Image (cartoon, rainbow, N blue to C red; front, side, top):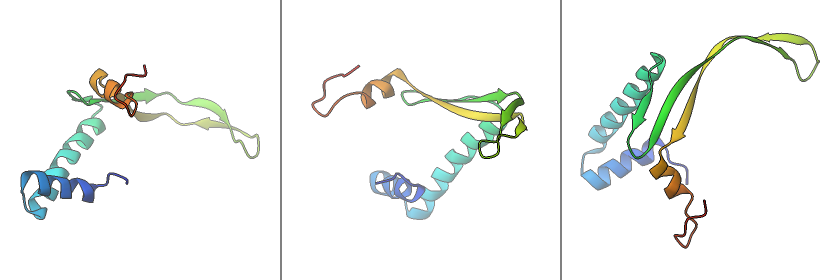
Length: 101
């Protein structure tokens, strides 16, 4: 099952007991704050989870894969995510709970 905003709202409602409307508002506030910080080029770090970083990519020459024509790839910003060591360890455990790294 994909973890969607609706699923997160239901999880907040079930675990904390907030009404759906409040749970949705809380989730929207959190996601909006993360988005605004990333738009400002700031890092977002959640302890025990991971860190989002905005990186600047310079423009560079490229090639259209269909036509082979040379093109200029424009400068842009990309968001990268790096899981915390705790998250990485948790994800890398196999079904028996043994570490596979």
